[in-house]
Length: 238
Image (tube, rainbow, N blue to C red; front, side, top):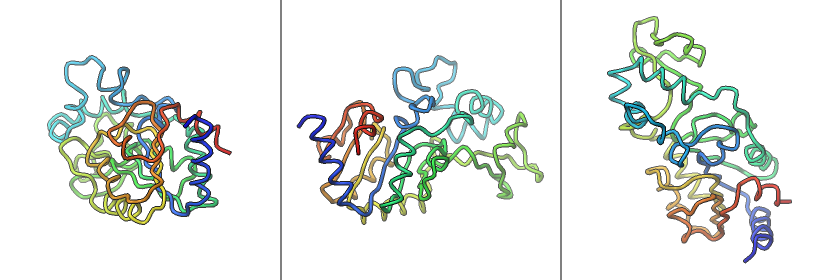
């Protein structure tokens, strides 16, 4: 099946579907200038004394919060990043379909693009809270070298760190959305990060689409696979 034929089939499936889950990963955000984690030029490949996976771990945050925040501000805050055409395409689908976005990204670009139902599996970089009293803060708290609450508790970002489980409520919401979906579209995810990628096993339909430049472990299970640039696929859809 050539590219044009695959696009035509994709268009037909979208037209016939009412409840669509769109599962997104770093590959959709790199189009907005945000580096991914595992590619050859990704965050995990940067030379440093301490590995990024270590810095972004639960125990490192508790034992070295100053260093953690220095890394966060330097390497992970892309507050000026804007949604790209792929984000807007997803948001636009809400005008005709029931769309649930399940994302591994923490950049909030789906919200900025206008999507209204977004399940952030790994949290987000816009919200912060005190680990002692639970008081909530916004990103302005990052103006401080080390964010400390008025109760003297340590403030942390609302992201899932290494050694931490995913939010159970959000994970269960994602399962429910996938169980009732009549179509799933994966966009820009290598599908190797668990347990997030395990969610796809809950889909039992026959409109499973993957858009990712590289091969994924789920390619053989998918009904339609694009290994082209996401924007190329989006631009071809009528």
